[in-house]
Length: 65
Image (cartoon, rainbow, N blue to C red; front, side, top):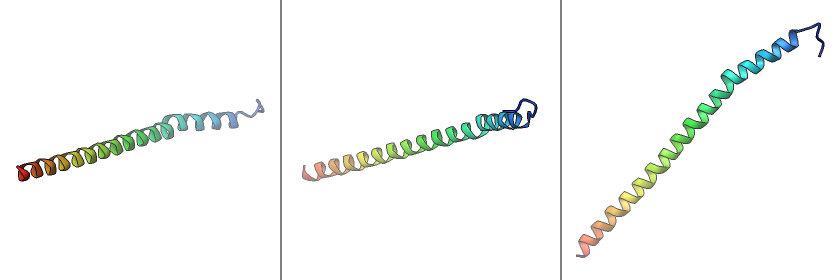
C-alpha cells in the first residue's frame, strides 16, 4: 500500500464499516428470522399431525367401543 495515497485505505475502511454495520447484521437477521419461521412451521406441522392422529385414534377408539 502507498502511504502517500490514503484513498484506498479510506475506501477499504468504509467498505469494512458498511459491511460490518449493514450487510452482515442484515444477513444474520434474515437467517435468524428464517430459521425461527422454519422451525415454527415444522413445529406447527408436527403438532397438527399429532393432534389429527390423536383425534383419529380417539374417534376410532370410541367407535370401536
